[in-house]
Structures are given as C-alpha cells and as structure tokens.
Length: 345
Image 1: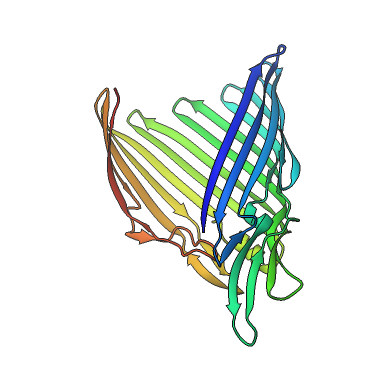
Image 2: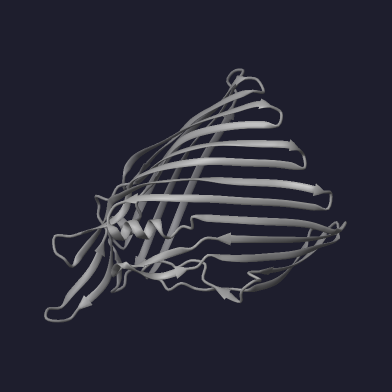
C-alpha cells in the first residue's frame, strides 16, 4: 500500500533557575499529522485520509539537595492524542556522588505507546477460503485499542578512577501492561488487535572503558535481558523469543601513527526465534547466535581532510540478523566495504 504524510511540528522550551538549588526546564508542543493511504485488497485503513492532533507539555526540575553530593530530578510529560486521550508520563531520579570517583543513581518513570492507525482502524487480509463458501480471514483494528503502558525502574553505579578508566553497571526492571495482542472475534474468521498482553523484563548492562597506554583505547560492553510475558500463546512467544538474552561487544581504537587510527568492533548476539503465526508450536525463523566484526582505518590527511576505509560484517559473507514478522520476508545482511572522504572548509 502507499501512504503520504504531511507533518507540522511546533515546539517551545524555556529553562531558568528560580532560586538556589533549582534548575527548571519546561515546554509545550503541538503536532499535526495529515495522512493519506492508498488501500489495497490485502491491506486497508479507514478512513483513507485523516488528520490527527497531538498536544503536549512537560516540566522538569533538577534540585540540588546537598552541593556536590546529592541531586533530585522530578518531572513529567503530559500529552493529549486522538486515540487514547490524556496520557501522563512522570519520572523521578536521584543522583548521589559520595566521592569524586563514585556515582550512584536510581530512577522510576512511566511511559506509553499510543495506538497506530492500523491498530485503531486497519484491516489486514490473512487469507481466503474459497470453498465451500468464499470466506475472508482478517486481522482488524479496534477503536477500543488503548495505549501500551510501562513503569520502568533503574539503578546504577559509575566508577571513574582516572581519566583512563571508567566502569558502569546498571540494573533495570520494567512492568508492561496493556501490551498489544490478538483476540478472536465473534466468528472464527475475524481477529482483532487488543490490549490483552502484559509482562515484565529485567536485566543488567555493563560497560568498561580503559586506556592502558596512550595509543590504545578499549571498551567492553555486556547486556543481559530476561522476559516474562503473560497473554495468548502467540503473543507470548513472539515477544519473548525475538530479543536476544545476551549481547556483548569489544571495541579497540589503535593509533598506528599520529594521523592514522585503526578501529575494531567485535560483537556477540544471542539466539532469537520467530513464530509461525499459523502454528504457535512451530518456529518460522531461527537466527543462531553470532559473532560479527567491523573495522575501519582513518587517515587524517591534513587539518581539513580525512580519508576512511571501512568494512562491516567481515566474518561472514551474509547472515540473517533479524527474522522479521509474519508479513515480511527477512533480508540477509551482506559484507560491506566502503570508503569515505571528508573535506572541511
């Protein structure tokens, strides 16, 4: 299907310090989107043309409780959209710096994802049964579809021993409600988008930056993600299986000469799976865990000109990075080589 969007955005922001210890920023916004879809037999959105309005405002105050030791940040965003009405998204964060090299922080925030045009008033033709009676199997939007909601809890610690070493670790726990799923209609041939899925995710992220010598910079990252989703069998598996549980990366920056730098980036991604929407016990795609390597070398010809030669996905000629969803065929990522010249004047 074809689609055209005309978007108007207007934003206003103001920052001021009303008194000692307060740093306030606030603002307002307005967005108008006028869309026009070219419906097809398989995919339809009604009405084909529509104008939607989004009004928003926010305020945030960073409060210094104890100079150079303790800060509290409070804020909220409020929106009004044409699909789910008024949405409030508050957040709170506290930062404690007991010493020059140590920082602790924790935060809690609420966020929402508003419905799309497809989830509100779309229709996707899933299939046709010609005999004994011509029947269309469809997945339909619903005006009852509400915003998806998240409450996010995070905490972290940063240690910066010197200018040559730092380490960060953060833990997170997310509570999701009213996530998008699918329910059966009154007849067995119609399905509808519905907020019938909820779940929790939790995990950690870790990063270390170290410059052991003047000509070498290293950075190691690792993240772990666990998911627990409650809902229909298809939605549960399509959400839980499509994000890797483990990811890691190692980046090296090597100064070969004063004006010549080699960068290497190795990454590991865990296994992910994608369900066959016709059978919740069968996987449509399985993307094995993988290692990838990118590299580039940058030559600073002079103060105004750089030359970069780079290679991406050097360990494999092509590989599947993501399995896509039920309606699209995945595309394998190929090895890429390119050169870039930058001239500043």
